[in-house]
Image (cartoon, rainbow, N blue to C red; front, top):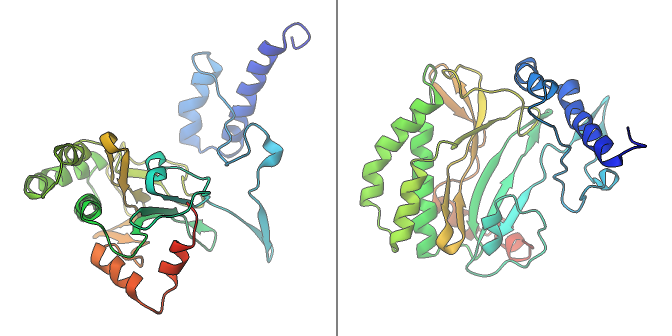
Length: 284
C-alpha cells in the first residue's frame, strides 16, 4: 500500500500509532468506550505531541526519566508560568517574555510526592499587590472556588455540585462590584460553565478514569479548576486545587499554598521569602 500511495499508508500508520498508547496503558473502561469506534471506522486516532518546541519530531522531546533508587521519576507535568497577555493562552509554555510591574502571573504546576502528582494553579501579582481590576476578577473566582469546594461531598454528582454552587453564587454575583459591564457578564457565564470540576489526578496529572457520570465516592481525586474568560480584553482568570473526596466532605491536597488575596500579598511582603524577587526576575 505504501508503494502505491504513501499518503494512505501514513493515515493508517497514524491511526495505529495513535492507538498504541491506549492499547498499552489505557484503562478497561476507556478501551471499551473508544476502541470499538476506531475499529469499526467512524473515528481515526492521531499521535499528538504537546511538548514545546518538539513539533512533530518525537526525538526532540526533552522530558526525561531520572533514576531514583530502584525506580525512575518522570515529570508529571511541565509547569505553566505565564504573565500578562500570555495568560490568555492558558497552556502557554514558551516562558520567554519579561514579567512586567502591574501584571499577573499564572502559576499552574504539578508537584509530585512518592510517585503521585497533583495540580495547583494560582495567580500572583508581580509587584506584590493586586490592582483593583485584578482583585475584582480574581477575587470573584476565588470566592466561587471556595463555594464549589464547600459543595463537594460523597453521594452527589458533579452536576449537583455545579448547580448548588451556581445557586449560592447568584446573590454574590448580583452584589459584587464590577467596574465594567462585560466583567459582570463574564462572571455570570462562569456560573453556567460545567467544566470547573476537572480531570482526575493520580500518577499522571491528567490521570486515567472518569467520575462525572456517577455520584462522588470516597477516594476520588480530581482537580477543582474554576475559570473565567473575558474575551473583550483577552483575560483569563483561574484558580485550581487538587482534592480527595472523603466520607465527610473533601481533603484539599494543595491547601498549603495561600488562596485568599490578602494572604498572597502578605506572603509577598514577607522578607523571609524570595518569591517576589524570583517573580520580578523571571520570564513569562
